[in-house]
Amino acid sequence: MASGRLLVCATPIGNLGDISDRLRDALASADLVFAEDTRRTAKLLHHLAVSVEVVSLFVGNERSRTEQVVEAVRSGRTVVLVSDAGMPTVSDPGASVIRAVRDEGHPVFVIPGASAVTTAVALSGFGGDRFVFDGFLPRKGRERTVRLREIADETRVVVLFASPKRLAGDLADLADACGGAREVAVGRELTKLHEEFWVGPLSAAVERWAEPVKGEVTLVLGPVEPEPSSTSDALLRARKLVDEGASVSDAARLVAAETGLSRRDLYEHLIAGGT
Image (cartoon, rainbow, N blue to C red):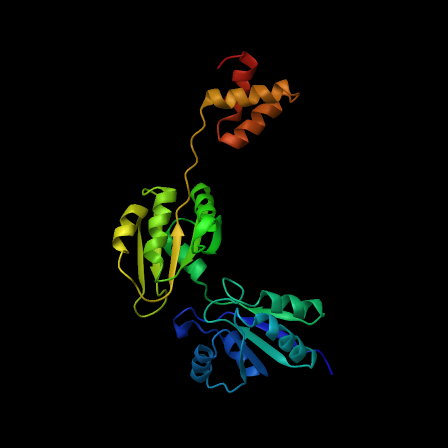
């Protein structure tokens, strides 16, 4: 029997109007669907008038279900993998399934779709040229402290998911770690009927979101502005490179790239021996 295939499908993050024709066709062609939450997937299938067997696959049983997925694909079946919302594996289960199917040489395809991550980045206005997705903050302990410290030093836009029950605490700890002036965007129930999107400094976010909320929450932290480099510090760095054997031209070029200062100005200062 010919090999089957695994279709990894993004599902709407809230608004069913975001269902694509490819997702509709994928679910209609499926012999078997593995879903993070069978009840939510059943509603999606009902909306599409699709009847297919649905099996649960969540964090707690992903390891044991993986062999079932592989066996189904091995037997020639078309298997669809979905999570509650958005793309499987993005703060959701599925990565081990994809690896196992691919390792056996079976085809794996992705059906793209809506994402809370990119939706929130776009709405924030912070820019999406460079950003990092950091999932959910650890709940407590040293791991949480270390992660907060890393985020505080991150120069790129940072996207986080937040439990509605822990939103207030997450914002308070982020304000302590990053400073109250750092900008944050808070998106709740994105694409849904009661969508909210708020942008402001962390200090104000702590007050605005102090009360418990309902629904899915996505946070976007604005980037840290790097400290401007002084010319004198840059020249010290450049002279050190020259002392270590670099040419004046190379030293000026390297330090200019690191600091954003003018390569020509650095070069002329080095040649003149000034500060």
